[in-house]
Length: 188
Ligand SMILES: [Zn+2]
Image (cartoon, protein in one colour):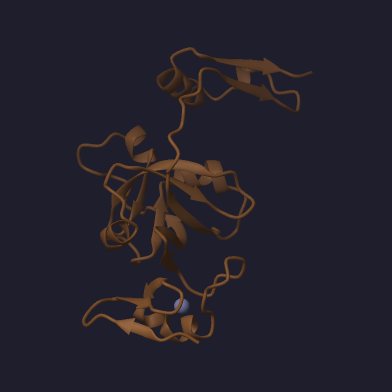
């Protein structure tokens, strides 16, 4: 049982028992789920700089001054959550959903949806979570260990796919990102 510490006129409450920060509307849920279970998410929260939030689609994907490619490299989170997670705008974060490979995007503020929403463009959602009926909950965390840039990317086409079938959009993105330092193999 927790004793939430309320901050007046703030939408967030910090639990003195487990250290999680959650929305005041979820006080009851947090009281019966403190510390929150990572496997069965009953409410969204921030703990140790990690946001456990609800993944959803960025509806308005036109942002002044940004190209579609740039927008697809972004994850949109409320300014509030960015601050509570001690993130900076433009900082790379890791987005991990159960059973899916983690993805890395740059943080950008948004006022769309809720304070705990984690929004990605439709293309990014289709690419990474396209086969799900409802988007999973995700954990957004800082990238603490410095990552190295890949020297070589290999794509292996399965199921009898031929090189000619490779999506032109994918090819131009690979060219843009890796400047020919990738190779594609056909497996017959
Ligand atoms: Zn708690």
